[in-house]
Image (cartoon, rainbow over all chains, first blue to last red; front, top):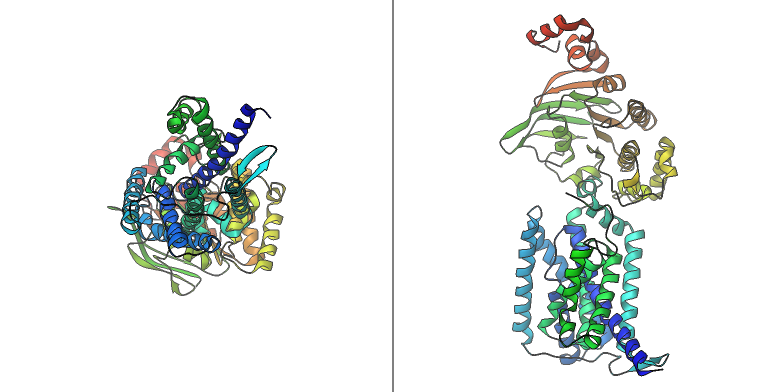
Length: 294
Length: 256
């Protein structure tokens, strides 16, 4: 295999892996937005909290990765539930802007608390797959990347089954489509919305625990919120499959831009895509054709 | 008495939308509330269903006070509203829409039987089982809304303007089903309507609301014989021409 092709294949593998993380974060943001119409700018900071917690438990406390993963995921679910039940729920009915301001404020506070609690230095921790790699068709791919792809695929499938077939999943869809009707059907909408936050919190935790070993355990992980927003717009705002597709595409575009375009483009590639999509095709790839006009 | 509304009053900010309303619904009766736009009919149902909180007064449902409770709690007690404008879930399938009505129920077998019953009343919903409800026609959406409410196992079914935006034939069909629900299951019905002719024809007891107050109460048969009701809601004097119209402005309505 020529070195060109090999490089391309390598980039593609990395891009899909990182893109899977973006997809997971985008999924969480879309879930919350569909349920509560709040655009959660604190979502990336949930990843920061999860990553630092995982680092403390693995590196400091010496727990096994397999114990830490469910533990942190559960804890983040509870944290996200509480965040909605105690704080965000109170601004229901306020203009969209209130939600933006509130979640940005929560984001800064979480980031501050993480710095206070875990220190400001970057950290890292090992996963069961760190350092290992597998050769597929002549291309070397890090095992961690493969695990990330598989996990995200599994989570997306589970979410799809959950929303399609379970009573609670259908009720979550119903509450987001018509809140009044859901109330009248006996759905405890506030509790259901907090459960959506919890679900999004769990996905954020998993994203954080898998992302940190690729990059670093650092408060700058919150920037992934902005990448995820680009992914959401590219995929079509409000579409769950769109969020996944958008996330993976943004991951790929970044990887290709880092090698094939001039230096520095990689860092702005996601936002360039965001602007281009908003100008050329505001509904995104999977945008609802019959979107609200008013 | 299944539902006993005592002196119920609801305000929207500084405006009293409903003032001191008294109304009762007995087991197994179809009760119609008639009135023009802005008479407070929807406010009455929304207050009873827990969508809005009343300013004062009581609503006793099966002897327990339900005014001021959350809408989901009221629905779980069997006081179920089919809201104005249908309020279906556009991106859920027809079946999922219907099954959302049974969300708070745990008795799977009874739910399955009720679903079959709804599908026998509305065969068209069975044909469109897997379609998104948002793609249905207005009449079919109304059927979904009524079927969904029935799947909540209501003791009292409240309907807000079920005839709104439907063709005369569909209106008759919908009211026929409402009668059938009552006849087959004994469910009491409280229906609010602008279409007085249909409501008086199918209802047992009737109330007339004007500007937030109940101004007349009687059986539907008796109401439809009253001169003032005929004139104001059934177009009874239209044939008399100009002199009749001119006179109407002078006469004071007493609702007797």
